[in-house]
Length: 442
Image (spheres, helix red, strand yellow):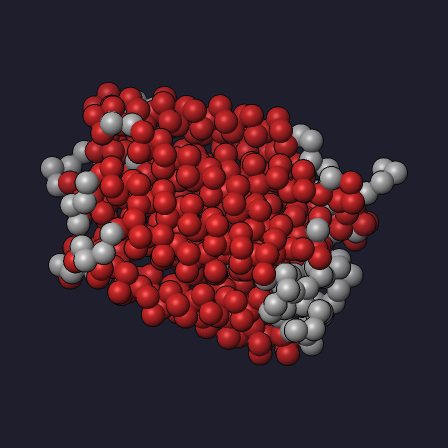
């Protein structure tokens, strides 16, 4: 190649990487948006709260497949290239989404319906486990000098996909959504996923991967577990605030506002979509700043605000003392501070030869633990305590773990001989197992 792709069209490649994520997250978030309806269709019960909890359990099951899918697909991404992993994940997930939209309910095929549904959710989660880690790996290796902002662009694309899913929920009347509307939304997602598949065929390999083809790891996951266990732990912790808030905003919030607090569905949907927009603006602005200041400081600041603000936020929602649209927007602005910096921090913890696997493992451990279970835990906490503000404790716990991870980055940087969490060039493939993470001085 006469001229490096990263020099010629880096932002086009970054948008393409993010586009696939947008389409896949549309499919995945759609299940959470329609979880109560899906619960009633595939898991019949006389108790609406039980149906809602079972629907959220189906959402959580999709997350359980993410770590497995992440490490399997990332293995090939580290061994054979990022491009092939991108193409395969979006194709399989698109087919699973189409099948989900066509799947008959419990009333038609009985117990086979929930079994097949959960298998399709596992397929979605398997592919999604490698999607965002792959995009983060790709863009940080394409423009390492602006890794935070590049990751911010990817997450913006992802949020656009999630926003589309919630807008469809807003546009569909409840009666239509409960019958054929949710199925049409899944079929649309499958078509969009196929479009993403063909668009991603234009992606080229990253310069960093092309430069180290002769030095690929034979077992990337084994190398990560043997030589980089602490980066996995720190990466998992620093992702916790974003993971927890994603579970709240994209999955829990709609049902919580309408079924628990009895806000009008239209108002709740407007608040949720306004929150997604505010979230996106905040993370994009934060990612721009994070290329110029120590990232761990930004993460610590945002996490601390979430810890302090979780209870007042849910208490204000429950009391109705402030407009919910404003409340959700403010909470989303705060959460965006964490989201704008966590992914380049995680990417910089691993060298090129195992970066995809390292990011996938840390990211999926975090999102499986803190995002996939948040809606279920929050709903169960309300049922167990009878306190509608109970989800605040779940969100505050996620933020506290991220805060601990941000604080640990200072010690962690010293252990590795550098300053983890600083704006940094991505570590090369030849870096030693305990080399420098974040070489740029603060």
